[in-house]
Length: 116
Image (tube, rainbow, N blue to C red; front, side, top):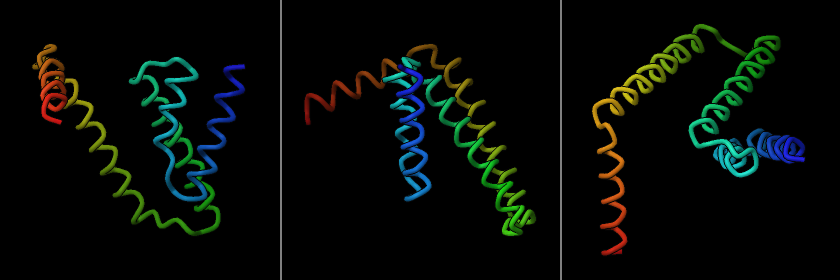
């Protein structure tokens, strides 16, 4: 049952993305609530879905002659480098903060609750 709900949800989200270009934010919500994945796993799976969708779309556009590699390759390389750098910074932040950062975020949230 869970697999059927997940597949139906993914289909609906993909249709919304194809139709309007938005709704990708719904995939992690679906994965967390129905697949019972933690947030990190849900985001990683969502990114994988987008990567596969992009690869399939690129192949189709290339077959039709509508994909210019001279433009696409530098953009893709920049995205890959940026993603790798962001992941490395995230790991470094976790090592340096050692839990103190999450406490700071909690305190900011408490402060907003008091004044808001």
